[in-house]
Length: 69
View 1 (cartoon, helix red, strand yellow):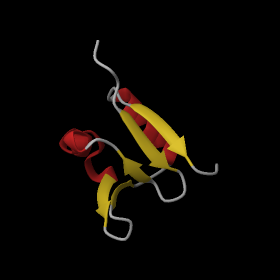
View 2: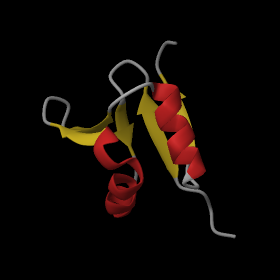
View 3: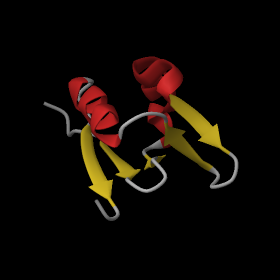
């Protein structure tokens, strides 16, 4: 089994950090829930952080949440 890919989500602004090679797969998985945030120059999610986490884990990713709850 290959190693799980880690996606890090910041709770405060929902910005995401993940390997560049996963961009297209994540855009397909999350559909309209992921967008390029020009202010932070990072990918960001739309919606509840826990929902995004569930969707990503369902797609086979390991999710780490950072920042204050």
